[in-house]
Image (cartoon, rainbow, N blue to C red):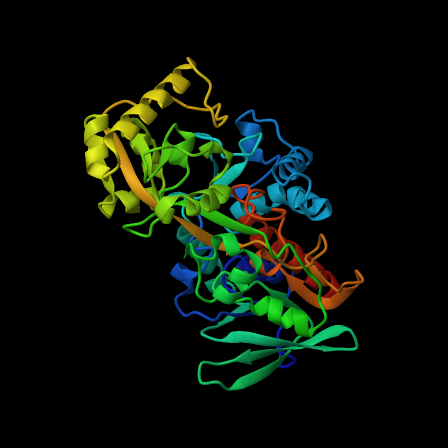
Amino acid sequence: MSEDGPDLVVAGAGGGLVAALRAAELGLDVLVVEASEHFKRGNNTAMSTAMIPGAGSRWQRDAGIEDSPATFVDDVMRKTKGSADRDLAQALADVSAPLVEWMADHLSIPLTLVTDFAYPGHSALRCHTVEGRHGSILLDHLVRAVTENPRIDVLSPARLTDVVVEDGRVRGAVVTLPDGTTEAIPTGAVLLATNGYGGDHDRVAEHVPEIADARYHGSEYSRGDALAIGDRLGAASAYLDSYQGHAALSKKASTLVGWATIMHGGVVLDVTGRRFGDETTGYSEYAAHLAARPDSEGWIVIDKDIHDKCLSFTDFRQTVESGAVVWADDLSALAAATGLPVEAVVEEMAAVQRYARGEAPDPFGRSSFEHQLTAPYAAVRIVPALFHTQGGLVVDGTARVLRPDGTAIDGLFASGGAAMGISGHGAAGYLAGNGLLPALGLAYLAAGVAADSHH
């Protein structure tokens, strides 16, 4: 690190590590500032299912899958009912395939294309992931690469609490240490990669009240730091009502049961033993639907075939190992094991069988039942959760933070939950991987602009 300070300061050691690695590759010296000493297991990147969309990647070509950035953007706009920022969606779609290929080639991360099931809203199989399908494994790969890079230093635990801007451009970063002392670090570029405000209950209650009483399943350090800094610097913010919810958190284990259970043919019952919607619309919006049901909880019902298919997910294996799955040899026994009304469960599941066989249309409009559920049955009690917020500082297609008049604060960037995302408003616009893509993709793009400005 030079005496003049780092060329780039990255706040947040999740997806922001991609910016550090890309900037170092382009010749910059980088300082990563991270608030949690346990970030390798506790941040939102680590807690994700490590699904990274890549539209038009070589893995897709090898599998004979036709896809393009334009198709991806169409999916985003359809899922968000036209409310997402199209320019940002286009920028992220364009970088998505180069990003996953760079991660594989430059960082030696063993990515594969998920082809065993399709996530709601994606018209092509485009999610790439690591072995175990878990964010902690992805983050381990990023941390390994950072540790091996002499151009990158990591300061942890420490919080980036302010950015110094003079004459319209970044001149430094202010870091606060655990003992309360502060240090001003000269730099010409700062990336805010501190996630959103999901850990700040007051902000959640203000912007997304329908999910405020749900369990928060994210980093305690996601407190809106980037928003606070941006506000002080006159930055614009947008989509603050946008978030990723999840309707499949195990009540017993606080582990993610996962929506692959649904896409393989499972269903959700509330505590009255009844279904209450089309589960395949998406796990994010279904969280608020579940939160609105009696007792704000329910049960995912699957069978052994689906159970076995989902064991490829680390989260699901952890749910199984926790003892959260109950088994039954018939539907009456399933009702007894879950405490749900017997008559309702038997009636509802018999109806599901008819829908799966095509003998009757699902009254909720669900058209995809991968197969008929057969004994033995399994069920997991679930509660709705808030995973992370999707709104934040307004950025352009290169991650530069913008003022309300559209001009950029020179040298200031935001990525992931610190920036506005591409999920539109509310929870219904969220597509699998569209939290991780802005985290990694905007970080990658920011590094390129920072390097161009430096050189």
